[in-house]
Length: 171
Length: 317
Image (cartoon, rainbow over all chains, first blue to last red; front, side, top):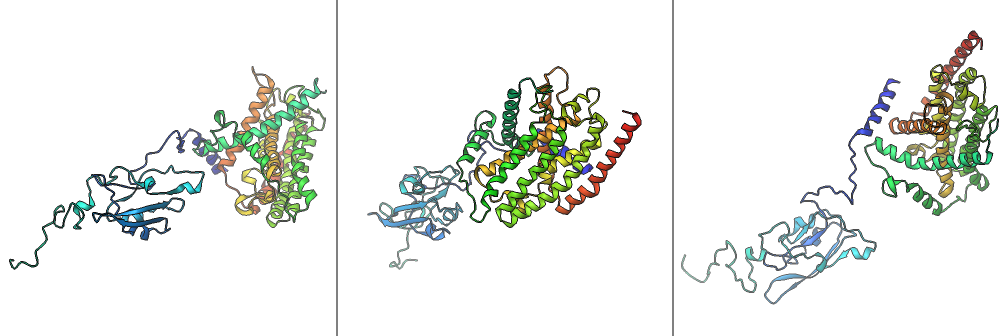
């Protein structure tokens, strides 16, 4: 009996507690920078696409929501011909970001992607590409990779030694 | 003594009761939220008041489905019974001196009879649904109502003895010196508990028990038929609160404010208390419910009646 009265009283006192509800559209909670939300494709510091169309993200994706087609431009640089993410399937697990060797694909702190039409949730490459570098400002894959592309030959990458001339007899 | 403007009283009380019952949907959700550190519905209209309207519009447009295996006539009739019986009880409630639909000399007895009849609604709904959960809910409701009605009536007899009348207006008048909650505190507690059981409110909501019987007797109901059960439940809460205010807390009597306001204040205090109880207490097991009713409440009510009777006799009323 006493326990019941005490319960009633302590529940009544909750009337004066702080509300836990965040009144969402008017009031927003802080989202941490590593929040896994809307997926973007980032660019190099000098503006080129980072994605090298290696398909690792599509392979890592547990729900198969990423589709892309690789292509190669005249300088030998690989890029996706199309890059499509079906956000009605995406579970925002972030595996694609972990798989990406060039920091191209990144998850951002944005979750407000509601649509009335399901088809609008299929994002194409132009919807995904952003103009900036995302979370890794200084990184430029083609500048550190030992692949030769137009305008950068082998041995010209950052911290890369010139290639050894195997035909020379000198040590 | 009948009221001076019978039609004004009838429509005032009818519409007032229905508005209060409808408004309780919002009040209950807001109060439950208040005691659970939330806000509750606060988007539609000022303070979310239009939520009731939105819910009503929604429930009217819901598919009104009668299961093919149900007993159609009874299935459709059952939800109406609960609303009709509770509304009939409201005819006996004196809101203020002279504002009453029917000032019967056996008013209190009539209300008790009507609340027993209201049980038919639940039992018939459970039976007509032809669904084992509904039937279990109806069985529980029947057993619970039978056991709690017994001492519900007995707990009020103390008040009737002290006032010397079944007439609600006269019972209120008899409290001019002292509210009956003081000499009849035990009776008040018993009636409070029995009232909760009568309205099937949360600590005693075993007939619907969402977590075990999915929704008990109204599992098969949809649309406005389901809505009627809800309106009936809220009307019941309003009725029991009004009765507590009338029988134990001096009804419309109070200083300064007009009588109707005092009545409403007391009624809403007990409505809020009902909601607080719902927010705070868990549901007992069915055997606990029954043994509480028969082994604790009934003897207490009988003892209360005996002692009150002896005192009244000794004082020579």
